[in-house]
Length: 92
Image 1 (cartoon, one colour):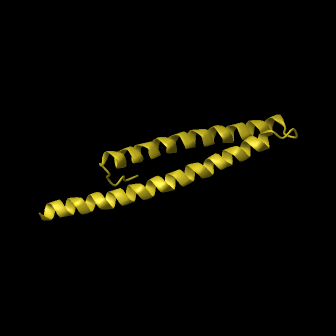
Image 2 (spheres, one colour):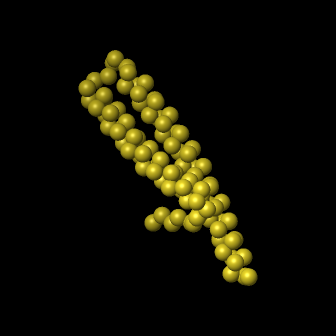
Image 3 (cartoon, one colour):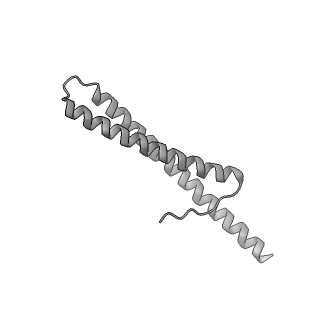
């Protein structure tokens, strides 16, 4: 009986932890998308040199890669929560 209660407690803690992580990831992704919009608007400026446009393109590409990676992580976390298999993810 005690093992069952301890396992239930671990599952509840893990679910809360993963739900918190999912909310944080969603907020971070939203902020990065906003930055991406800012870069797009800045790039539309006609006063930019080729080097400045290249720099903005590089920043945009880095943001897109970061957003894609975070989207993957968010999807994985949400999938585990939906499957009822939450666990505490340790990042080293």
